[in-house]
Amino acid sequence: MTAPGLITILLGSALPMIDFFIVNVALPAMGRDLDASPAVLELVVAGYGVAYAVLLVLGGRLGDTFGRRRLFLVGMAAFGVTSLACGLAPDAWTLVGARVAQGAAAALLLPQVLATIQATTSGPRRARALSLYGATGGLSMVAGQILGGVLVAADLAGTGWRAVFLVNVPVALLGLVLAARTVPETRSDRPAPVDVAGTVLLALSLVTLLLPLTEGRAAGWPLWTWVLLALFPPAAAAFFVVERRLDAAGRPDRVPLVPPSLFALPGLRRGLALVVPFSTGFGGFMFVVAVALQEGLRFGPVAAGVALVPMAVAFFCVSLAGPRLAARFGSRVITVGAVVQGLGLTLLAVTVLRGWPDLDVWALLPGIALAGFGQGLQLPLLFRIVLAEVPAERAGVGSGVMVTTQQSAMALGVATLGTLFLSVESAAGMRDALVTTLAVQVAAIVLTALLSLRLPRAVG
Image (cartoon, rainbow, N blue to C red; front, side):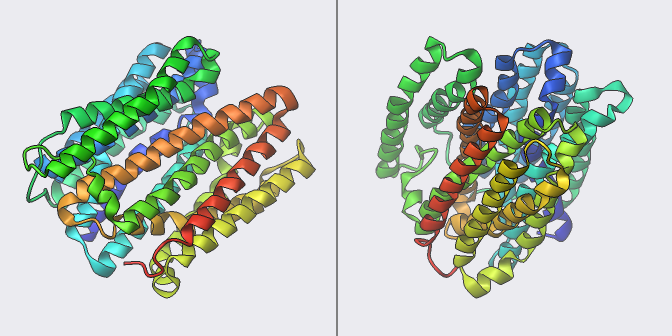
């Protein structure tokens, strides 16, 4: 794959990641303009995240079968159309529906990026491409909230919060033109048919877990949230049983959506075990910080975005050095990154305890920058470890599994850490809520550091 092709697919990977976070700072403006309740605003976030997570593995399978470049183009076009629908939504429920459709489009688009990298590169070129993918992902997650704040404050042509969605339309058009010219077509040599039963059971498992956790607090924990949570264990168990039987049968006409044999790969299995706590903490952190800066410290949308610039810059810069660091120190780079991230969040918590509510961007900078530095050491290398042993013919499935795990964990982080934060805030105030949430995230980082010691020392 040429450099322009790599840049194009990285552009495609940035759009879905940015849009998971871009709405955080725009939610207050959406609520005022559309007269939306907190529960409906939660659905604006959750609808996108759940649809995205549910369909990612299916998107990877479709790319393996029909061609990854083709699905990339379809996903990019659908993302542009659904972004336009979000930006023009006349009421809150129309916006929720458009966000669900946008999440589905993202699920078609994103798996093709990693699968194309896996299928068209090897050796040092793959390591560099995966490092750039990780850098793009981390930068996009932080940049989403920065860009959201700037666009809401700018109020371009009176569009207000709508600009956070409308800005995707020209970017998607540009991506379509570039992809048609620069991205090579790849597909699996042995494409498998869609596993309908597996797809339905995976969707049921993720919806019954993520939807009630995300919506429960805002909706007042009605009966339906507990019913869905009760359905999650049997749905997940049924998914595992069905997939294991299909995998064991070994029939080419009935291939499981997520082959359990894929988890026999040590790098994928152990790497995903780290992706879960890392992404859970990251998703929760970004949501909580958006609320704390705007509602607690009374930062405007631009100031709230600017406060996260040090994290984005530190993440991007250190992630570019990932291949050289991994070649010299192996997977211990992840351990060091977890320690650095933990120190950064601890410093941030101490700063909040001592200075609240008289904090400005400069006071927050050291802790936020240090946390971003630590994250940049971890995430790109984690992606590389998870995918290193996945064969090219399973590139779409492998990337779909990894991104589904990452996305589900981020949505889980928003739901769990967000609920914890808002619960403590109502009882003890914003400062204590933020410190408590940071402490819980540090505990998750300790788990990440310990699990990283089980990774193979050498990185392929």
